[in-house]
Image 1 (cartoon, helix red, strand yellow):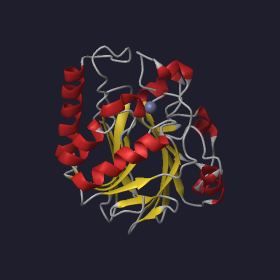
Image 2 (tube, protein in one colour):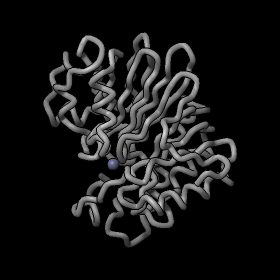
Image 3 (tube, protein in one colour):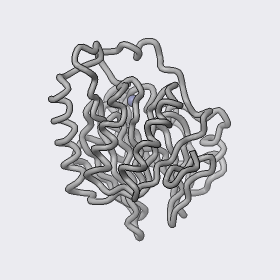
Image 4 (cartoon, protein in one colour):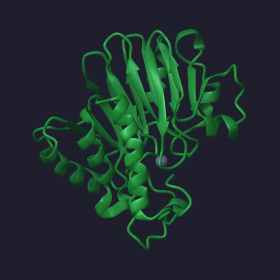
Length: 272
Ligand SMILES: [Zn+2]
């Protein structure tokens, strides 16, 4: 996998002002000089890398959660007092706040599409999803580096007749493209994109990601949400390097995959 612009993320990807580390499935951690931003923590990596980092950091910790699905949210974050002042900043999808009845002083932002949050370290914008909750863009103060975590935003283009199809493929594509147009209007370029490459989509597993990178110039892409389909995900992602020579596609270590829960295997109610 060491060809051209495909680099395996055995070591974290360090760029000028942020280090992105895969945790597991949809969970990533982005570390800057003064902040640790955790996206969609639901479960740590087998080596416990997230706990190891959070238990020793003196930086401000942010927990950013796109939605309540169990592979995107762990209620432990509601009482996990880590980082500077032992007070993480919680930026949670409104569906999480509602389900877990999180009290308002505890949560810095209950995110719906169009909502924003800003402080001395970052500016966050919530966008729509094509499934539950939101997708999230983060701009780092000072450098303007942009991160985007898609949550379950994807072109869920299941073939006609597939039991997991929630709307017709063309409708799904129209919905995805309308969300993508909103993202493009805000971010003509994204430095670090975390985006689902779900192997349940079969031949269409790259469709949403390719459309995204086609419309928004992305410097680094981190495929996620591939369940146990690690090899299929890798061999497909490698094909993207020819289509998008300016983009570096990062692959996680082989150990970082999880079994698809039985209920999600033929699920027609939720992408999970
Ligand atoms: Zn998901």
